[in-house]
Image 1 (cartoon, rainbow, N blue to C red):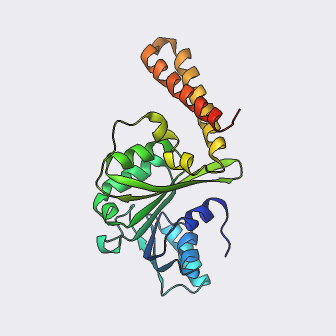
Image 2 (image 1 turned 90 degrees about the horizontal axis):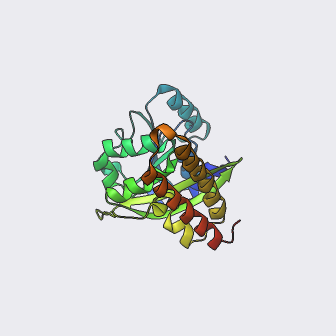
Image 3 (image 1 turned 30 degrees about the vertical axis):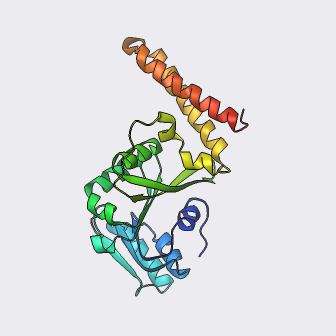
Length: 234
């Protein structure tokens, strides 16, 4: 088995663990790869629908992992018991859904040694949600698959809340800047494109013209541009 792009980055950020729980597992490729490479001792492949679990069943039989991988049906983190909360993967779903699933099973999330989050959309919601709910961001990295950039965040609960942050911290991520992620410049450029579109949209909405909101969004656009220039971008 070979993983590439998004799935390979998720796997690379999984620390050695006893139990790996993959939420929304689909083909169970990440837990299977983790078991085959001794990154975990046991894996839980969880999904809310029977179809993905049927595909996961084919994967675990193909790689002879029936004794090490358990398939469980349920919504979000509900199939994972608190004493099983070791390393949890929430990947391949939208940022809104990810925050909802963590909130719904917050006690399990708090017990986890760490959680890996890979949002497909609304990435900007993840960091503020984590910080406001007492989670620390341990690491984060970017990868490119096709023409799309993907973000993976490694987090754990500490109980320490971080509020009154600058919006650019929510959007870009301090760790990506500190570690000088190779794809950071492209990540910032992508956000500048989206921010320009947001500003232009606000300005063209004459019926709902909101000068204060426009000023706030233009301020963020300026901060993103300054950051890009500091990275040697154009």
